[in-house]
Image 1 (spheres, helix red, strand yellow):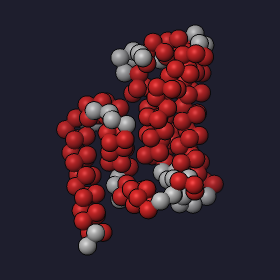
Image 2 (cartoon, one colour; image 1 turned 60 degrees about the vertical axis):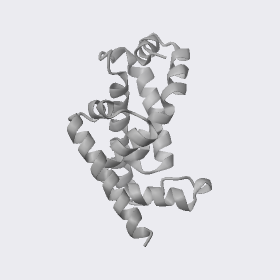
Image 3 (cartoon, helix red, strand yellow; image 1 turned 180 degrees about the vertical axis):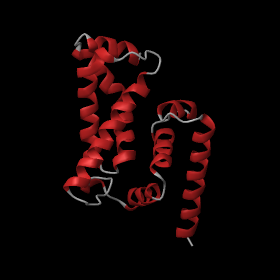
Image 4 (cartoon, helix red, strand yellow; image 1 turned 60 degrees about the horizontal axis):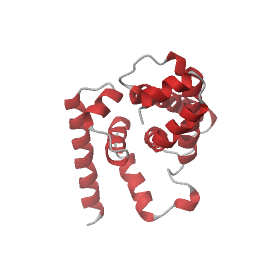
Length: 168
C-alpha cells in the first residue's frame, strides 16, 4: 500500500482509505506514541487522535515522498501535548502495560527503556519494534544518520550493561 496515495484519497474524504491506512500503520503509530508517553492508554488515545488529525488535515499534506515522517510528526506533537496535559493534571507514574498484560519480562523491558533518554528510546523502539531502517529513523527524528546510529548503539550498550548487572 502506498501511504502517500492513501493520504491523497483521505483528503477527498475517502473513509475506506483511512481504514486501509489504519490497518497498515496503527501499530507503528502506537509504538511511537508509547515510546514518548510510556503509558498504554495515553498511547492508544494519541494513536486515535493521530488518525483523526490525518483525516481532518490530509488536504494539507505536501511532502509526497515522506508520508511517515509527516504522520510521525503529528504523533510526536500530539504526544508532547498529552505529556504537558498529564503533568498539569497529575504526576502519576503508570506502567507502560495495561493491568491485564503485566508480567516480569515486560516490566523489565519497561525498566530498561526507562534508563534511556527519550530520543534513544524512540530510536530503539522504531528500529526494534517497528522495523524502521536507521536512515528512515534519522529522517523522522530530523537527525543525521551518524547521530542516529551512535545513539542506537549507545542505548544498546547501556541496556546490555544493565542486563549484565541485574543478572549478577
